[in-house]
Image 1: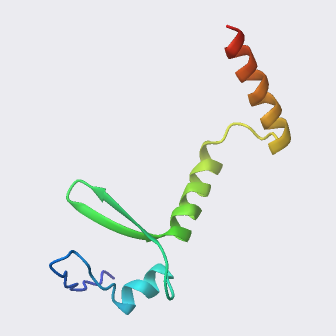
Image 2: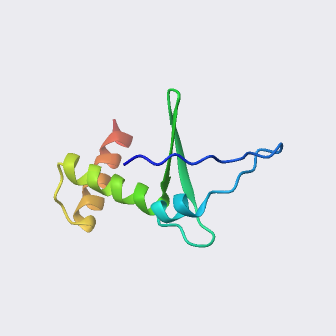
Length: 85
């Protein structure tokens, strides 16, 4: 179910995020939210939600299952080859 919430914006651009919105975002107290603009639509997500989404996207699109140390060795070797060429 979609919930619509009116938010008042002060002359200086500040606004208060209502409790229902903070709860939906999982933000308690001070926190950071990510605002994305897609055309005429504006979307708020919490930093935790954004990180989780990025991790999900990585898992779907990652083609390299190397451990981090092996990955770094591979990248350094690739960079060295690029510097030689």
